Amino acid sequence: MRSLPYASVLLACGLAAACAKTSSTASSGDPPASASTAAPVETHSRLTRVADRSLVCMVNNAYMGKAQIPVEVDGKTYFGCCAMCKERLAREPETRTAKDPLSGEVVDKALAVIATDADGNVLYFASDENVTRFESTPR
Image (cartoon, rainbow, N blue to C red; front, side):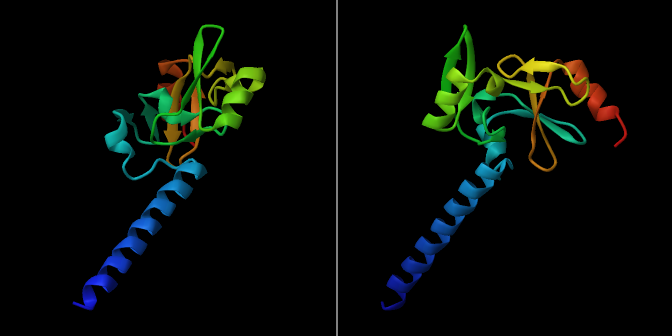
């Protein structure tokens, strides 16, 4: 009977460590291990397209793996992970745009094709064609 409380403590510590790992992974931009069940994605050799843009904090440019706070600006929806990101999206236009890594074109994050690379970086593309061309470009 004495081992039952000890086992409970070990289980609780293990769960806490798993939660901390998921939180730190999400904040670093890496898709969490459970991300594949959160939303369907299309995987390529180097990129994974994000089918559900609400899973991305568009201020931190991080895949969070769960729905973020929607922010409506000029009829478009952006997503932030916290009150500060929500405020920045509403007030700072530069947080709502990114450069397409292939063309260098400035793209609106609410309209962009979003993908993550093997390192967990979030990339915003002007079109599906640019994603495909980026994939086929030798690095």
